[in-house]
Amino acid sequence: MTDKAAGEETFISHLVELRNRLVKATIGIAVVCALLMLGPGPAHIYDIIAQPMIASLPVGSKMIATGVISPFLVPMKVTLVLSIILALPWVFYQMWAFIAPGLYQHEKRLVLPLVVSSSFLFMSGVAFCYFFVFGRVFKFISDFSPTSIAVTPDIENYLDFVMSMCLAFGATFEVPVVVVILVRMGIVSVAKLKEFRPYVIVGAFVIAAIVTPPDIVSQFALALPMCVLFELGLLVAPAFVRATQAPEESA
Image (cartoon, rainbow, N blue to C red; front, top):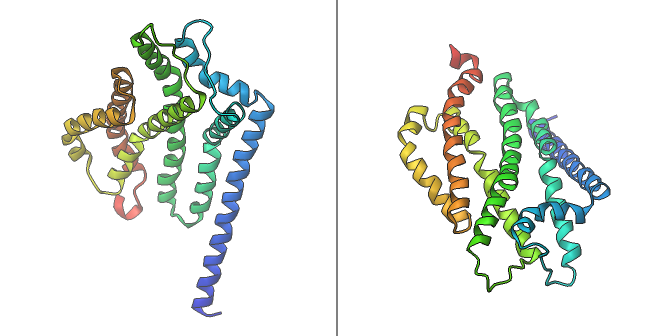
């Protein structure tokens, strides 16, 4: 067999392996989605997601649906998004299983913790947004609402808001992983990142002002964790770099 033919065969085998991993990841999401539909059900899941908003409204108030199929479609979307979030560890594991055979031992010590921590941090960001931020943001907005206005949020607009906020907080909680990767790849040193600390703090508040609603509660709720997680990344990065060095780097 020629080198060209061997290379083509290897490339095809990698494509087949990638397809298998993608199929397994999709099946994992589908299984979680089916369990959620058979368990609590889309309607109950949406009721749980809507609870922070409902709690901030006057007693007896409800959200509205302006679309004909919105009462069916929106809970289904929520269930699917929740399935993807809950299946993230399985999806990241499939990603890890695909790239692991081509890695050296010290590279495996680098990738596996990043895969696990990325999944954990993203889910932590989403949980922080739901359990801590939503209730305070909605109460803050409700307190500023004039008494002449009946606050009846649309369920589709509420879903868009919840998804954008959860995505923003999930991405924000990945800051330690970004710091570790930058330091491990030699792009920037820990000492240089410490020098950039004032700019990072300002940047955190600028990002929070852009991606969150125009209220001080949600902006501080996003900016402060971002600053704390940046400091956490600075603490973890040196130990992580030492633990994942190649033998020649250690020498």
